[in-house]
Structures are given as C-alpha cells and as structure tokens.
Image (cartoon, rainbow, N blue to C red; front, side, top):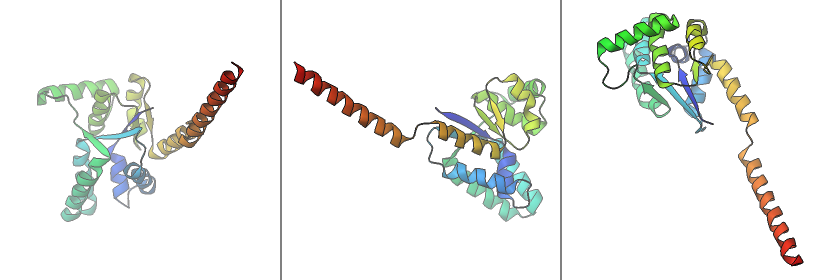
Length: 194
C-alpha cells in the first residue's frame, strides 16, 4: 500500500510561525513528515509553496533574514522528505499554464492561490490533500473520486488507523516461521509413512 500525500502551504506556514492558528498541530504533523521512516508514504507539495512561505514569513515577521533563513532550511532539508511539484507538465507554455489554472478554478471553484495547489494535486493524481482550509477544496473532492481532503490532525489519526490494520512485520515473520515448521513436520510424517 503506497500513499501519496500532498501538503498545502497553509500547513507549512502554520508549522513554522508560532503565532499562527493551528501552529502546534501543524508542527506535530510536519515533524511526523520529516521524521517518518514509513517507505509506503510519499509527501508532495507545489513549488509554489516556497513563494507562499516567503510571503507569509516576510509579512508576519517583517524580517528579511528570518525569511531567507526559513527558505534556505526548507529548500535544503525538506527536499529529502517532501517532493516539490511544478503546477504544469514539461513543455507547457506560460499561456497554457494560465489557461489550465483558469479551467481548474472554474471546475473546482477554488480561490486563486488554492487553484495552483488543486491543479498540481489533480495533475499528479495523488491520494490525500492535507490542509486547514478543507472548505476551499470541496469542489475538488466532488470532481476527483477517491481522494481524501483532511486536516493534519485527521491524517495523523488515519495513519495510526492504517498501521493498526496492517499485520506487523513481527507477526508476519512468526506466521512464516510457524507455517514452515508445519510444512516440515507434514513432510516428515508423509515421508516416514512411505
């Protein structure tokens, strides 16, 4: 089971700026993302997120050095864990990109900045969209079947539920060992009867 999880910029901004609403929950989620060892989960965001992070940071802190520091840290450390995606396919012209974003806005009824995220998500056919603005993406949920739009708090609960439903590696190993012993015992009995 492989899960592809897209992270909206509002989650990243809230995780980095202490005064933001949902800071604690966002930080907990981002800590999970940056520390998880689960190879069955891949995380994505839009390249556009870096612009939104810079904008939020400079407007809230008014400090250029803090803004550059955050961007440097995010670009260099997060890229190991979060794949930044362009909101367009290779070879797409700027005019075509804008036309595609207009179509996405009309189809999903999203605000301007959210349209870039919705378009990037839909273009890459991902599974989960993580945001605090779930209401802004109802149109996307109606139009893209099988996706889940959750808050960071809800996705962490979902991950826990999924883990509890999977057999643990230890249980799987014990089952294989027991099964192999039973096969050997059966073979011994069958060969002793002949």
